Length: 167
Image 1 (cartoon, rainbow, N blue to C red):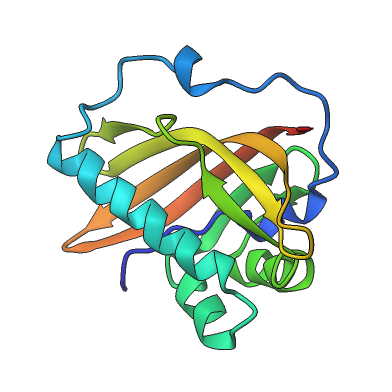
Image 2 (image 1 turned 135 degrees about the vertical axis):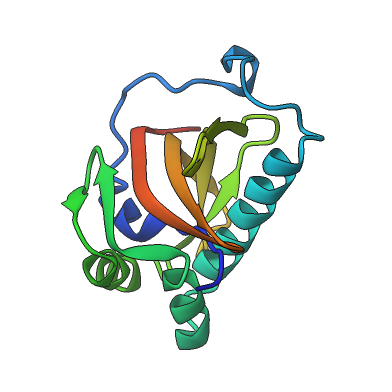
């Protein structure tokens, strides 16, 4: 399996609530240095997963996005609820995300923490920008749990929460 990170399948519920969002300046400083090889790897995976996510109107890109997730991925979304499988998460992504909006990582917000004998935790802040207007009108926190096996990385858990509208 190839490494990829997707997350936003559930962004369908981007009905943006008013929970407080952590800014990059408020982020906990205990994550890995940005030059650490694990940070570099997870950062590249985040970019790859969301590059495919942002182009998921193309069926090939949606399949690529899906390949970053474990078959029984757990995706927790404060507004959209929980999905328990990659199949259901990708169906929600296809219905609610593809062709509607893109995801952008908030610069400086990404943190990576190793999980011994398993993989890594990725956390940060992302914003959502509408394709029809180009306006970035939503923001949320996220956590992704990555499993590493051999030379492959796969997402096993995702939390996307604290969704709120931005001006």
